[in-house]
Amino acid sequence: MPSKRLSVVVTRRLPEVVETRLTELFDAKLREDDRPMTRGELVDAMQEADVLVSTVTDRIDAGLIGQAGEKLKLIANFGAGFDHIDVATARSRGILVSNTPGVVTEDTADMVLALMLGVTRRIQEGMKVMQEGSWQGWAPTALLGGRLGGRRLGILGMGRIGQAVARRAAAFGMQVHYHNRHRLRPEIEDALEATYWESLDQMVARMDVISVNCPSTPSTYHLLNARRLQLMKPSAVIVNTSRGEVIDENALTRMLKAGQLAGAGLDVYEQGLAGNPELRDMPNVVMLPHMGSATQEGRVEMGEKVIINIKTFDDGHRPPDQVVPAML
Ligand SMILES: NC(=O)c1ccc[n+]([C@@H]2O[C@H](COP(=O)([O-])OP(=O)(O)OC[C@H]3O[C@@H](n4cnc5c(N)ncnc54)[C@H](O)[C@@H]3O)[C@@H](O)[C@H]2O)c1
Ligand SMILES: O=C(O)[C@H](O)CO
Image (cartoon, rainbow, N blue to C red; front, side, top):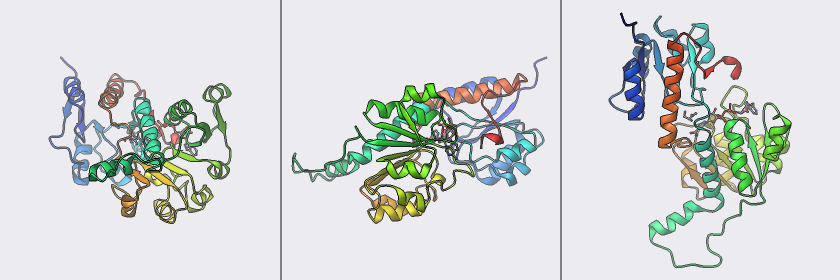
């Protein structure tokens, strides 16, 4: 007699190939539309499922976990960041949490470079001229940006994505610096030709570009607060593909408005879906709708990771990408 299949509830639409495989392997309940679940829908999902496949658009806090059914044993997140899940409360209820690290690394690092170039080479302003039909022809002094080569890049959070950014930045001729919770092993630091700064204050004061690549945790909340942002050079640019909460967005907005920072490239926001509204009209701010890892290949690989995590759990082992509160 076949054993009972795990009941898996998926909160968002996923690539078709991933949804198909989920239904082949498990008793999977998929979404018909693609809006985030309401809190009530999430409660229902967490009461009926053995496994919930969540995404960054599901805020799974202690209150919600408190309403989970006895059956719920795994939250298999479709995404690397897991700051939207109260992992400690889940653990106290015996619910495991897994994520999808690694497969998002290269795509997100590509987007960091795209944002850096977008801001420093004024791509948004150039596009606007073409879209408005106002281009008067080539001119020696029009739309001059700054060269990335030779500039100092400071990476805040030198994990998977941070290191992938470092490799790309080196290819552009940038000098790579970093601040991380732990210093990298010497052989990795040497391979990346990266300079470690124990003091974040000292690093931000000396960089031309800052790339934020640490996770959002209680210890990284507003790590770039008004005081630290004010240490930056007025000519410096900041790029954030991590999570909005790492930067004090109001302070960033004020400084950009006052010309105390040269520009910003943002994929993630602290306030609402699209950040402080004042950011949107600034020519030196390039804003994207959280699309750092948004490639077709990456999304399928994320789905494969989710499936491996669930299948391994179903086979009686810990999911390979289990996350634990200590990681915060
Ligand atoms: N924009 C996107 O689409 C997108 C895609 C993937 C990941 N992300 C975000 O990027 C983050 C990083 O992903 P990753 O795979 O590189 O994670 P990772 O865990 O490999 O690296 C994070 C690094 O940050 C460091 N860190 C943690 N707390 C710190 C602190 N207080 N000060 C300094 N360094 C600290 C860690 O030591 C680690 O080296 C994710 O948590 C997620 O929020 C965004
Ligand atoms: O963390 C990630 O993988 C992306 O930001 C989507 O959650």
